Length: 338
Image (cartoon, rainbow, N blue to C red; front, top):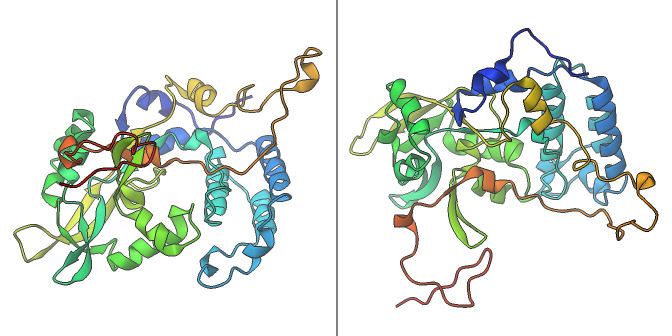
C-alpha cells in the first residue's frame, strides 16, 4: 500500500509541466513516506551485490591520490539500515550519495523514482585562461545554449525579472561566498562521482562538449545541472562583461522534468518508482518448460546518465567541415583540416 506523508497532492500541481521550481519538484518527490519493507528489499540486494565487489578492501584505505574515495562499505550499509528516515526519498538519497562517494561509474545507485528532475542554473561555468592564468567564468555561449531549451525555460526568469543573459562570460569571484575553485573541488569530491581521479571529476563540474551517437551536445556540468532539486538558488559574485566592479547575484534555479509522464502522485509512483516485471526480471519458476532463455550473467556496467545533463549543441558552435566518411562512429568524429 502506497503511504503518503501529507494531505494534498504536490505531484498533481506540477504534472505535465516541463519546468518547475525545485521546491515544488522536491515536494512531490518527498510525498512518499518511508517504507521499511522497501528499505530491507533494497539493502538486501545491495549487500548481495557488494558481496561480489572485488574492490571492497581497496576502499577501506584508498591510496594517494585517491584517498578521498575511502569508504567503509559495510559500515555505511549498517548506518543506512539503522537510520530513521521520514520519506522514501530521504532513504534513496542517502544510498545514492553513499555509492556516489565510491567514485566508480560501474557501481552506483540510480533510483529512477528520484532522478526525475534536473536542476538547471542559468549560469554554467567553465575554466578559461585570463591574463595568463586560469580563472572560472560563466560559459560565454550560455545564452545560445540555454535559450534552446525554449520559452518555457526562459519565460520563468522573465517573470522573475531576472536577467540571466547578462551573466554570460562573466568572471566568477565567489560561489556561495567561497572561493570558486574550492567550491568546484568540493562538488567534485561529494557530488560528481563516476570517476576515481579527482581532476577528472573537476572537469565534470564544468560545462563541456560531448559526442553521443554521433551527435554533438553540451553538458551544463555538475555545477549547473545536478540531478537533485534540493537548492532553489545560488549566490555568486561576478564581474560582468565590460565592467570592472564585482556584483553580487542570487541566481534562481529551475528544475527540468526528465522522468516519465504522470498526472498525480499515484501515477508518478507507478511510472517512475514501482517495481514491475521489467525492472525485477523474470520469475523463471513460472516459465513454461522449454522456454528458458539463454543464461545472462550479471556484470558491472557503467551507466551513462550524462545525456540527461546535456543540451543539443547549437549549430553555430559545431564544426563546419564535413566529417570524414568512415571516420565518424558513435563518440568519434574525424575531420581533415584545410
